[in-house]
Image (tube, rainbow, N blue to C red; front, side, top):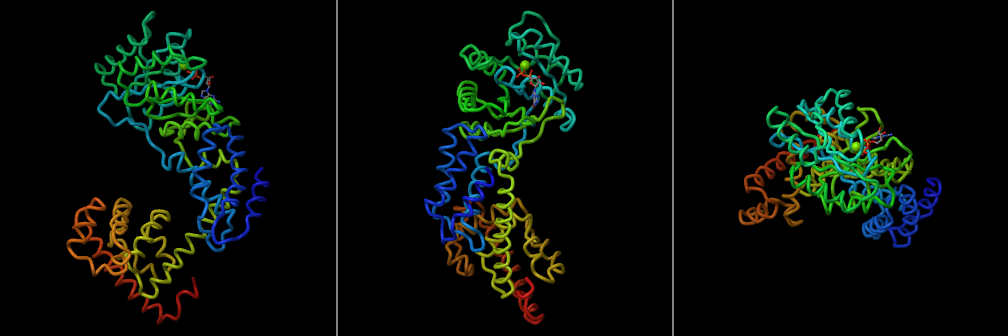
Length: 440
Ligand code: GDP
Ligand code: MG
């Protein structure tokens, strides 16, 4: 499949921008790959529409083929849809934090409950209590108790003939009285979604008011994933998804389906029966696995790095000439987010090591990068080229537009002035040094 894809992407000839036909041809194969990965049909359709919208008309950067551009866009949209960053469990509320596990029978709820308990105990130093509300399956409560002993986490003592709500009440009381930080409620599942199951989950939810409701789903869930996620979310209101059996052959297309229809984050990935087999969700890795085109993704990344390199070189060239306006700063900030710090880009300039301290004192910091970009993006292109024309009234407008105080704009302008001066002096030095760009 991958070979076939490379073939098609190679066929896309080099043009100024991607045409509808280019993109459609590439997307035919992408759709097939997604279906092979068990992504639900509706999701495949709307995903490929999203890619199409983004891709048609997109510029093809010189030295990068249109095919590579399409791959980059497919990959980007996939990672975006999956959720760019891992979202942690919400465990920092006032204790006891209640986490409720829901899902079909055999999805891995009980196993995952114990894995999460172990993780919260070991990594987050939480006092954890587990309780099984599964009164349907014989020995379901014993199963959790056995796992509890294995991971050395307390389980609520078993009292026969109680309803799930009675067990939930005992768990809440025990947590309050005995000072547990987190209570994990493992619930009963069924082989398929039905009304009694949904009603039971809804009742437990309104009774226990959990901080997290995690839908546990098998990564091998195919076309059913959409129905499953939609139903649980509509009736119970999930806060996150745990995908199990990612150690199997499945490519995990269910991740895309469920995320797409619920918008809820995939929080954890289970990769085996052992109690340590639980990972944070890594969107890039899962995207790779769903697309099933590792080699092409590697190509994409190389292509993206090339773009960054070219942009960086262009920026370095302007800097060397002593030109550094707010637009340049804005571009740099965007790149800094990607490349891990402004020093990464500045590193392209010879002799920059000497400036490290000055750069550090310029206080470029991840937290403020986003805000600073917002400020610059609120300015007109003319203002970006020549910030000296900014009057107090415009600054107030820009402050309002970007959600910051005027002082912050002044600080940014001062910082930019400092940097521009530095660039200028460096540009001069390099001229004397005999040509910077010859070395880049
Ligand atoms: P529940 O009915 O949702 O509570 O599911 P269980 O937790 O009882 O799990 C059902 C079976 O799946 C057990 O044999 C587990 O060991 C197994 N299982 C759970 N998670 C995983 C996983 O991530 N990978 C593999 N290979 N097996 C798992
Ligand atoms: Mg169970």
